[in-house]
Image (tube, rainbow, N blue to C red; front, side, top):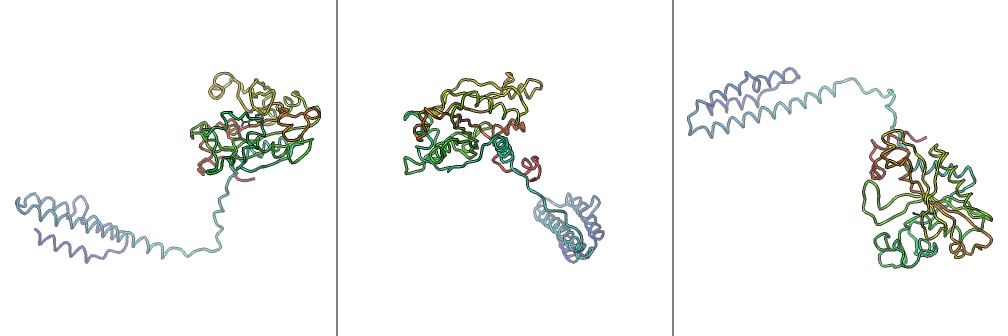
Length: 339
Ligand code: PHE
């Protein structure tokens, strides 16, 4: 039987099927249900025990040889088919260049800026690596405030004073040092906090800060400005301000938007209350004005700050913050091509 298998091996090597049909025929002849290898397997049963090992190995070798040859022949036939296919048509229009899409964070940032542009706010930006003064001390943070803690803030190694800003409020301080009232600005930017990455928090995210300083700016102005924003951005006409605390504003508040309780999603994202927390705000603390050499007896102002990811999650009903940072094209494509 070994001789017979050797013979077949040679035959396989010598075979030269060319077209796809010929190759298929060749395959069936050897590997088909009634093919040569099936027949050999039948004969194998009769082989005496002591020869089984050698014959078995020879049979396996034959089977591998045939399988490899069929693969090789098929690939060759495909190449031939391509090479002899229709000539390349250089006048054919191409399929179009796929367009990228603006990132949802950019879309939302732009929209928020535009809304405030319309009522006279201009844009200011500041550095991401900051010193303690602009992020904390100049904003009236007491020396022992937990936000300064190593747990919340990324410090630059080897430098006690340099850190990654934890909020865009640092830009308020820079601008108050640079300009004189009236000041009416929005300050978008990236901020960093030493937090575990999860569906709800990230170590790097985006904020937009607002600041308005002039003579006789009141809490009513703050409230009206925020109501205008809520209407323009969310199309919701009801807001509420809850008392809160920030070292750099007094009084401080958090703004909720009334979202409604119509759908199941409404219940989920508002935790059954119908209200959504959107931003932090307050009247600029006189200490903060003073440390930037703005006289609190003459001027007053309000400030607010919001997380762009949070707002984008609400706008697009996105359940996981990490989506914004993965740059998965299937996610980004949903926000439409760049306009
Ligand atoms: N900086 C605050 C934060 O990051 C938000 C804020 C900005 C609050 C301006 C009041 C005024 O949470």
